[in-house]
Length: 322
Image (cartoon, rainbow, N blue to C red; front, side):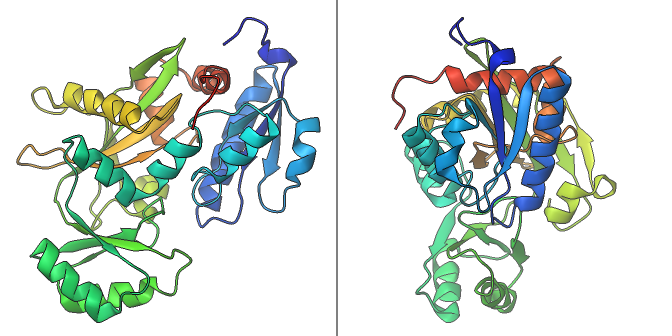
């Protein structure tokens, strides 16, 4: 961060909300980050993307801390507007945000760079349910399979299909939801793990691995928001060199997609030793009990310090970021 930037002199806008299905999580992130900034003597105000007057924003804030999850806030759209307005903002630019949000585009980049990711099939909006089921049978070959939105988060509208009948039911249900495009992925049994990547004083650091186990069918929305439904370990203490390997891959994925400042890379760790990458989150949750904060704390970074590191990423981007 240039020495002329005094955090205490900045008007910080915490951008959150919008109309995404992930709005509740975004509100939790914004409230936690805003409270932290103000408790540290900084000047932070929350701005809801829903109905916000973007043209007035340059007169109200000097920098934006993004706590906006999901469609419209994490997919490059808000980032593009902020670029046009000349307002520095935390995290990744337009390209990395858009690619990271679109799971199948991410998976194509991972595959091209020889990084393991579950096999998948795009379900185009024009596909009938019968066509999608047939394509899944021919492409993936066996059940169970996993269905999820291409541009969604939080495991919303995701589910497991154990046969063609269940897959057809999931796809019919999906058409009633706000996400326009879905994907079908090979189902891999394993432990859900995440690695946070955070820029600290200009250097990327992979945080300790966070592992979650649940008795539910998978690490779904309910388990992600109810501590009684999950068991967490951080550091994960995976066997052999898996912890270090996941950290290395997380930084590699972050850099491959051109992410900046912070990200969270999600994995599955299978009993056979396979560790496929599921996705990257370029605006990870910022609640005090969320995965990123938990990983930071395990790495010796208290929550308030983590928030300051994130804020500084707004000033360490190159002059031009696509």
